[in-house]
Each structure stands twice: as C-alpha cells, then as structure tokens.
Image (cartoon, rainbow, N blue to C red):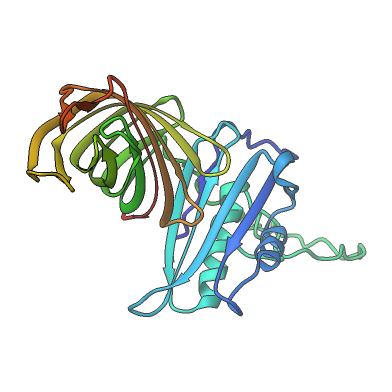
Length: 334
C-alpha cells in the first residue's frame, strides 16, 4: 500500500518543531470520534499539539462517510495559517480502515517526519532497554559487521498551490427595482472556481432566476410583474477565510424579460419587455462538509431598459439601480 503524505507550507522539518493544530471530525454514529482521531495522531507523532481553534496554526476538517456502492470515504481539508486550503481523500472497505487511513493522512499532513506505525520511533526501531555490558573474549580473526541502512521517513509531497471546485445548487432570492415592490423568487446556479493562496482565485457562475409580484394597487386597478433572467458572474478575486468561508468580488450581467399585466380594469392586458443589467456582485460560500456548500449573493446593477407602466397615469418606472439578494444551498461536484 502506498501512503500519501503532505508537507504543510512554511513548516521547517527541524527536530523539535511543534505544530499547533485544531481538528474537527464528522462521521456516522458508532464509526469514529474526534477523540479517537486525535489519539491516533498522538501515537504517531510527538510534535503535534492539539489546541483550541483560536490558537491553532493549522486547522483540519475531517469527514468519514459511507458510500452508496459500499465502503467508506475518508477525507480532510487542511487550512494553513495563511488561509490556503488543501484536500485529501481515500476510500476504505470499512469504517475502521477509513479511520486508520485518515489518521495517517492527518498525521503526515501535520508532521511529515512522523512514523506510519504507532508505537515505533521515527526511525522505525522498537524502543528497548539498554543491556548491561558483559566481558567477552576477542576472536583472533576480524569480524565483519554488516551495516544496515536506517529506514528513511516517507517522502513529503508538497501540498497543492490551488484547489479546483465545481458546484451546483438552488436558492431563494429577493429583487428590488424592477417592480414597485420587492419581488420574491428562486434561482438555480452552476459554477466553478479555483482557490489559490492569494487573492487571485478566479471563478465563474451561471444562474437562472425567476421572481414575481402580484396584487400591486395602482390608479384604481391591480398590477402584477414577473421577471425571468439568466445571469453571469465573473469573479477574478477571492478571499478564503479560516473557517471554510470564501468571499468573491465579481462583475455581473444579466439578460431576460420583464412581464406586466393588469386586472380589475376596463381592458386587462399583458406586456412583455426585454430586461438586462450590468453591475457587480459579491458571492459568499461556506462549506460545512466536504461536499455541501451554503451560498449567498448580493448584487447591485444598473438596468439597461427603464420602461414605464401606467393605467390612466404612470404609476411606476424601472429604477435606475436594481438590487438582488439570495441565499441557497449547493452540492460540490469537485
């Protein structure tokens, strides 16, 4: 079996260098506990010190989940002190093997020079008590003492400089500016991005939205509005926080249709007009697990078409600035 090891960026592999870490674990009941994972790491390394999250230099979010086809997946996300994340994942036959593999991966991620066998020293030799010296005759012939090369620690693989993500999901939204009152609705999204150690973490998201508002009184009649849009967010900048929170600054645009209709009037009618915007948005995402993400969006845009609506008199014109806010949940495919 080939073990995978991860060397945290910025860690000097000098004797006595201690790593302060905080660990969280999500696992099925009866499968594994956070305490068992911490104890397994302690048995393999004396250079990892477990502390509260506020004092930690590195944070590990671990997860063990059953697979639909059988077996278990074990993975973790390591967040460096700089906020850069790196991820590892393995598949095991049962929960015990998943915990053993996860323990080794976490140990090597926090201490690349740790042993992969608990109870042994880092050189691989069993600890033994020194035996008392004994007097023995020296033979006349010269004895050849075989020299055995000490086993080397596992090679440290560098943690990745970037992480690619791809996710899809749904959510609810509220829009202001396209109708006289706030328009509630829903949206679907599909997007991907790259998380780097710096601010350059580009991402793109394509979404479709539907919002409507009925029963708006105006000039003795009643009006209703329906908005359907396809929006594109281009996000060159991203900032990764220490708690799986990512904030992105984006340029946004949308195209679609704004429909209106009247009722309780002499001549009820419906109209369909083009609608589009250009502006900016901020995207927020939080990952409570390795697959699930909670997303939020806040956009401010300038409508390209500013139609007016009237019964006898003009009662509304599309506002010069439109605002939309949404909250949803998604599933990370990558």
